[in-house]
Image 1: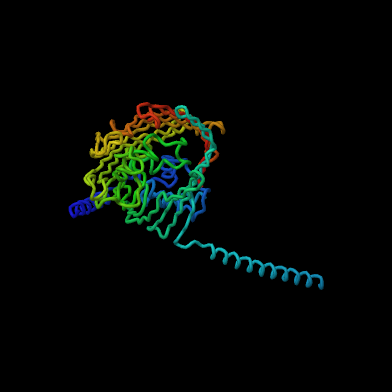
Image 2: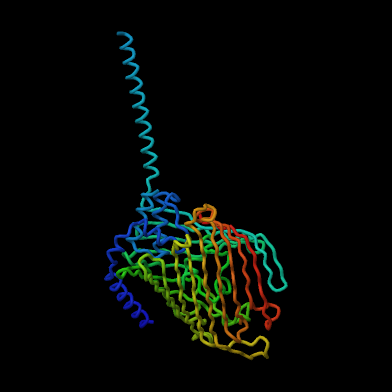
Length: 87
Length: 396
């Protein structure tokens, strides 16, 4: 059990170092919230109209989607701003 | 002069009154706004429901019924930008009653831009279907592929802790999920001894001291996120502690694919999904129900299942009616261990036509045929099953 715990801790550190050292390209970093919304929602379901929810509700729904659809925090913030501005 | 003085006084009075009323109105608006102003904690209720009509023929048995469907309310609570809780309940009609189950309930904490840790009961990211595509308003057909769902060979939910997130390496996006869970359990000597050697998923208690570990890595090779390739694995002990099965373990692997793209020459959105799964559980001896007392039998406990699905929706058509239609086709197959009492190798073809009222409300009409199913009355025979359905699914 101790061995497994050590392997997990080591893997966690390794992943943390790797993940935080990776950077998006300039083209990716400059994507707008509308682009991210258009590209990611349709991967599983039809894209929701910004008018579907209130600004406050979008903050909750988008956080749910950040977890479920594996969005980065930066992508999530951009999508929330887009949906709230287009609402 | 008197008239001028009187008129001036009237105007001043009206203006003062209007200003007073305006102040009262602004004050009331401010109070309402203050009352409604959201705090950092935010709550939301969402979910989905589906109902419809099924016409089923399995072997010589026929059934025709209005399906009461399933309601799945989802509670979401955002305590802060980092802390999030969600729970999904699933209510369905069983016999004369109504069953309410907990599909998942978990709390997530955003560690940084690329890492989220969550704990509780969650949908397992083993492939993509059960975690992302199974809800009735998302699934393009009204049924799940072979191998999934009740009596399936694939994991659905479990209790544990998970680390997940996404990050970019240049133009390529990667996402990952790593988890430790109680794990599946080996079915032995229960109410259904013919299922000995199968795995039971989503149990609330752990039947041994070992934990099951798993994960998924997803890769988006193109910068527009149109294609995702996923690789999943899960490994752990499944036998109950202090029994002859305590050293029995299972290893599972899956590969999944998703391609979604607007194809301009078809004026359509094309959606391709697929997943291949392989399950290898250690061999063990089980009581032979048909032999003498004490007789046992064994078999190589390997199963596999896969599906491929294509849907086309002419979302760029000039015709408003056509834009709301969607054609779907899916093929799936299941192979369970040869020699097991639950041995079967059915194949299934499903086709459907959907009409989308809006982005989350759909009317599904479909036909599904399944061949090679195990006959419950005669284990040596296989039977076919045909289903025609009309279902209405709604996300809310």
